[in-house]
Each structure stands twice: as structure tokens, then as C-alpha cells.
Image 1 (cartoon, rainbow, N blue to C red):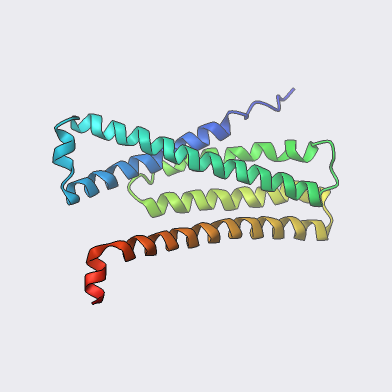
Image 2: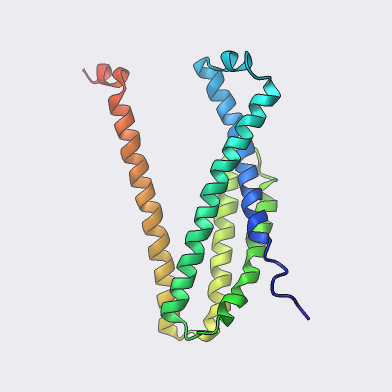
Length: 191
């Protein structure tokens, strides 16, 4: 008899793996930034090189863990809402069918360890894992959906995720423009 909870730990391990790989890359980026702006020697007076890297790794890991956990929460909510609106299942059997899809992210997290030196590579692995999971999700629930239901699920997913990422992009762009406009160096150059 197969236990349905056998893979219930995989989402946590997937989040930890992706958080770790992005954090390891981020430590090197922050060390380079600290060296360029001249803060690194001052930090080394209080912490050894290993302690500084470990502190940065822990802080970045917490930050990335929160980001990936929030993405998982949003993803589960969007999946649940799409099944609520478009699937005729009220027993939760569809949800149990797609649970094993967490293996896709786990494998993606393992593969991202190979790409530790490339931020673009890690982003591509995460994006590819997400696309494969989306295809798996649609494939698993499609027998219980009509054609219009399938179109509705795909449309809701695409609309929700694109709205989220476009909103985040424009907020970050507005924040960046505000910071750049407030710098005195930039305002002198414009004169």
C-alpha cells in the first residue's frame, strides 16, 4: 500500500535547496560589493572571513526561504482556486493526484546545486522546474476538466502569475527610480 504522505517533506527540502543555492551565490556577490565600497576591512575587524560569510549565508538563506515559501503559498492558493472554479471534484482527489509533483521542484533544487556560479543558470532551473510542474499539474487534472475548464485553469494561472510578477517589477522599478533620483550625484549630472 502506497502512503500518500510519503513525499510530504519534499516541498520543504525543495525550498531549502533553492534557498541554499541562491544564498551561496549571494554571499560572493555581497562580499564583492563590500570590498568595492570599502566596508569589508571594517567588517573584518569584528568578524573573521568565515564568520562573515556564514552570517551572510544565514541572513540570505532566511530571506530566500521566505521568498520561496511565499511563492509556494501563492502557488498552492492559485492551484486550489483554479480547481475550485473549474474542476468538478469536491472530494479532493485531484489535489492528491498533483501532490507528487513536488518531486519536480526537489529535482530542480538538486540540479540547481550544479549551477552555483551562475545566477542566470539558477533562475533558469527554477523557471524550468516551474514550467514542468505547471505542465504536470494541468496533465494530472485534465481528465476531470472539460475543454472550457482546462482553458479556464490555464488562463487563471497565467493571469495570476503574470499580474504578480508585473506588479513586483513595476514596484521595484519605481523604487529604483526614486532612489536614483534622490542621489546627489545624479542630480548634479543632470544640471
